[in-house]
Image (cartoon, rainbow, N blue to C red):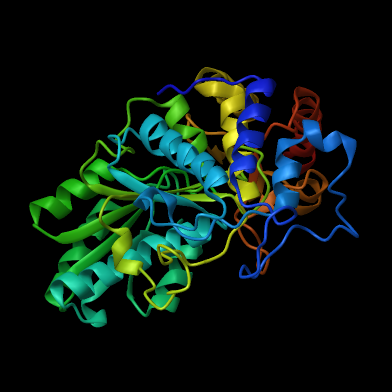
Length: 415
């Protein structure tokens, strides 16, 4: 896992060189593109600071990154310069973070993890329909009850069957016997094809599914399945803490990943990333997009090139070594919180390689949770859990203040 750290000067040079290769709305005879630069009544294109602001300059230039640029040379030529930056970003994520072989994957910057997860379901549904002539009632999506709501959303949109797996309320692990029973029952009831979603950090708990155990059972039964990893939260932190894992493209069971730049990377919202093995994107080609060179394979269609540039800049300014150090700092702070919770005998769940700490709601009042903006597991009934996420803004002073007041809270609750 290594990619080079760039200086600010190197980043500026690369981005501005890429912008110079894009079609320029201001200087070229462009009549056919239904787009232009950002409105100059609001966004000044001649502000002096822009020469030192590659992301803002890209935002104002407004390149469209429609399509999937890893598929080859067949994509819109107008913005080929910044397309190359997105391709380098996808290469870093696929090869360096998730261990893919060169040229063995495709990917793009999506609107977020929700889109990336639904893109995976869409691809595998069409794969089964086109390659096996599957009926929709023969395809099911398997996922745990702690899975992000984007999976049920995608199931609804794509008219697929749902197999929701129960989890242990203490360990947050999928109850394996229940998993075995539900898969065998589905097979007996006519389900022939499975799309399996596994979590590399659930949103509420930071729990991680046992991918090897699930895959081993499916392989034993010779089940026809495709496996997608929802790494929307964990993708930019978990592989940097736990390097001896099965969550990478070296694992033949895995076909795709979703990861989010707008979580750990501190990128703007709208910077999810979808990665998939080669020869799968074709199953969602929209042939009706004839006016788009190279067609379109994404849910969102047109998308901001500035978002791709921003994520690339963040990864390059840190380099792999710097990013690893930064993620370890967050995990260390989460570990510190857990050590103090242990001293206070407060019940919580936390995966040791992640920065989410989820506290049993019986140990804190709702008023206290709201004071520190903890997130409940539901807003409609009495919460069972409240979540802490140790992000870069969660400095030691905030943690100390929280723990001091929590100690007082415990004295009031249990006196």
